[in-house]
Amino acid sequence: QVRLAESGGGLVQPGGSLRLSCVASGRDFSVNDMGWYRQGPGKERELVAMISSTSTNYADSVKGRFTVSRDNAKNTVTLQMNSLKPEDTAIYYCKALVRAPPYRNLEIWGHGTLVTVSS
Image (cartoon, rainbow, N blue to C red; front, side):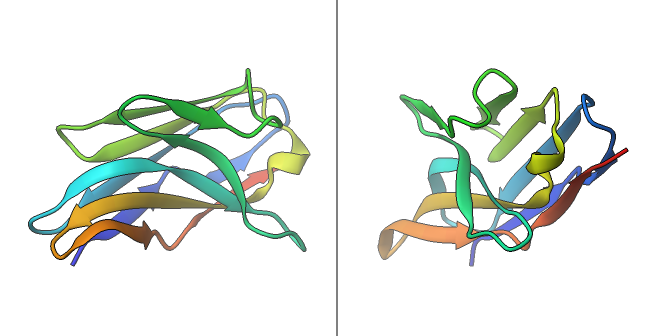
């Protein structure tokens, strides 16, 4: 069984920065894609950023402010969030697509970490 554990959420003032991390753990698996989604108050869950072995995809609302990176050796993904805005307030969920026999592209979600941007 593959699990994701997020860390790094919290309260930050507008214009500030936060760094989220997520690590995948388990047995007999490899990570295909990994990244972040978020769900704000009264909103649907939406893509923030996903990274594969060949490409990175960002939501338009975070381009130029957020940077996603991964460490394949450690099965981790990190989201560096700069110039945060109140509208970035949300629960941030780590998502991974993993190869774990017999599954070739199994979707795994973390429990989420709360980011609050407020003065």
